Length: 401
Ligand code: HEM
Image 1 (cartoon, rainbow, N blue to C red):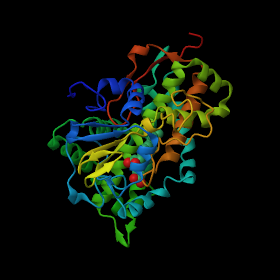
Image 2 (tube, rainbow, N blue to C red):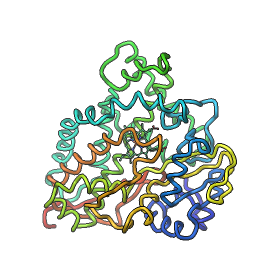
Image 3 (tube, rainbow, N blue to C red):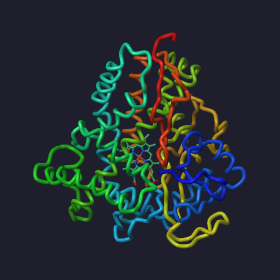
């Protein structure tokens, strides 16, 4: 089900529009110059800041803007879910947020993530081995999408064979935004029902996985409720999969479409860390939202309580006031203080994991396929909604083809 086409981006924007999905950059550039905080009546009212300083100001202002919901839909989640919200900590406001976030930091620390590198590399290698001998492969569906599913399933202690189910949940939650409220609720209930037996099992027999860690955690001496555990695990599944899959896919897409950068990276693999930061900046996959708490004026805009603010970290990353040659991809750009992982207290808790997965995925891919290009640029398709990345990406991997 898709919404009517956008008539005017300043007064009627829609981030699920086909034009936005295919190429949002000119839309943001135009708005930044003419109407830096755009509005739409869609979704019960929403605002769209496109300048870095405005995105940053709102992301850092938890007094006027709540994270009660971070996915724009025509509905508003019930207030009773506070303080945890629908997926703590991303849906929690201060002061509860700090405790809900803190318990995650150890499992996502650089040291914990370094321990996952060898198994991630072995898995990426298995995936490229399966593609051997082919001329054209789909780098999104046959490579990028599998990597985060395997890694997060391992961390959570869920069966990797349920990968299709996880991707189904992610798709329904992030892309099924136009569905009626009852269907949105059913989607979440299906996710909770799937996770509950695992939470019960780990409560009885803890292991060293993240579900067991959460079951054993407390806030101010009170153990987490099973409902809190389930909602955080649901968040990790959703936050960990589509985002990283999109980031790996966009990086491969850029290199397939830009032979000079691909050749430079193959010749100078030491550039990979700065190249990854630049891919994150230029193709930042994640846009999150806030709800306006009470009527407030922001940059002259009369924001009404319960209207959305779409926090486009990707648009902030293309702001020429923040980045020189903002629309160019410069793989040795330094410094690069991009906002791809967000700004403020909700900054991504999984950034070390995401960076490790991107680095390993690109190292293994470039070693297996030093010479690749888009097989059919018109066949590339992009996801619709708040997480953006290629969903079909046919590339020709034949040397010298
Ligand atoms: C390239 C991949 C990724 C990108 C671009 C990304 C981006 C983001 C962004 C922009 C936020 C801020 C949300 C907000 O302000 O409302 C966020 C939060 C979060 N991310 Fe990521 N993310 C990625 C991968 C991951 C992974 C792999 C995980 C873990 C499995 C993860 C877990 C989280 C969590 C738990 C939060 C909420 C933190 C909080 O509320 O304190 N992310 N991410």
